[in-house]
Amino acid sequence: MGMQFVEKLREKPAVQKLEKFFPAIAFLGGFAWDSITLGQMVYDSDILILLAYYTGALILVILLSAQLEHPEGWTKERLQALAKAQAKPKPAAVAPKATKVAPSPAEEKSESAEPVSEDSVSENPDVKIEESRLRRAAAFIAEKTPARAKEAANRAALEAKEATAKAAALASAKAKEAASRAAIEAKDAAVKAKGAATKFAKNVGYESTAIPENAIVVRHRFLDREWSETWKQRFTWAVQFFFGGLFSALVVCYFKSSGSLASFLLVILLAILLVGNEFLQKKYESFGVSLAFFCLLGTMFMNFAIPHLVHRIGFIWFLISTVLSFGLCLFIWKISHRKKSILVAPALISIFLIVAYIMNWVPPVPLVLKQKIACQNFDKASYSCDVDDPSLLQMIGLKIPSVHRVDSSEVYFLTSVYAPAKLKAELEYLWYYQDPKTGKYMLTDRISSGRMMINGGRESGFRTFTRKKNTPPGKYRVEIAYKNGAVIGSGTFEVFGEPPEDGFVRDTLR
Image (tube, rainbow, N blue to C red; front, side, top):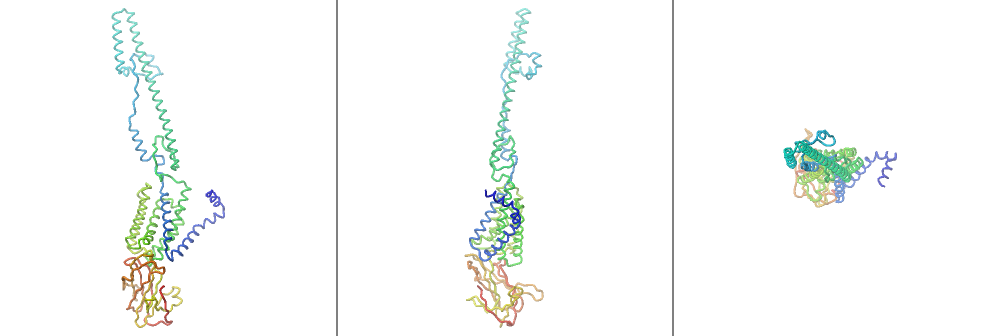
């Protein structure tokens, strides 16, 4: 009843017009919600919701892997059973014994019975004995009796031969009748087998029930079927929904952790796929396309979720995420009985992601840079310092911050990095100085220490700082990164050697 109501509702013109905007509304609504919630802090409930999306996608990709391998019912098991049945020798029909008597010319031309050659009849031992006895009796009578008696003996021998021919014809007719009866019974059995096979095929969901009469019915796999167009549409719509939910959340999470151009390009790729997902419902009917997207989303999701469970990040955990995701794709391929070529796309995606992580193109999720300050006169107790009073252009981000150094004071760079509770990760700072001649930023210092070990769980982020004494005037960029890993975030500022015109203001790292 519920489905009928929905179908009738969709037939209305107003609803059909609104349906065109449903994908865009769902996309913008889901992305906005993820940006508001996941953009602030990730809770255990968020991980469970993403896990539900991933599990739903897993089930649907398995269902979409179904295919009718043998539409006419010829499975490997059936062919083996049929070959075994055909190899059995057929029992030969045994004709009843008969006495040999020479057939008459009229009976030899008779069409009512099949011709029986004298040679085939005489091959019977019993017939040979009887024929010999009759001949001896006829010879004795011919010697002992006159011509009339000899004629009677010849007549008796002829009658005996006619009786033998009748007996042989009768035996042949009975054999033919038995063969016809056996053929009729075999045909009836084949018809019954076909009916049973057709009934079984309907129960397991076949749309094609054209099973050969001599096919042997065996139990089929659940995925050995062909879904109707209606169910395909339902499955692909659900896949599009679950993939969209995962893409939306992952774009937000990876964007928040992206601190370099290379990692930002990966986020752009995810965003393009997020938008493209709204137009790929029909494409998801292809098992290869669905499996490739599932592999990509699985690796990115596990790379985000596993650190929340093991409280660690690093290459080994990313490798585990990739192997688990590809392993699930391998499992789906195994139960689907598809060709190995289906695994090419998931394998290439997995290799690409591993290379991207080694090249520090993958953002170090779930670490997120929450706040950054370039300043001087730092107070460690309150994490406050003096910053230049920002201009309007600096406040709206159209001009980089400035640090007017006074009396050769040290320049500090403060950051707060969010990490899930109990997660531990060592950070490092990289100082770059822009060469005035070339305009390129050159790495001058790489700073790390035990005090830069994150202990996650603080909502505003784990606070740490770095400082530099010798800072000649010029432009600087400071990157904060997972040690020997991808960049979490960065800040660019310009150092001057004189006091600011508008003075200083005190700022505090939350």
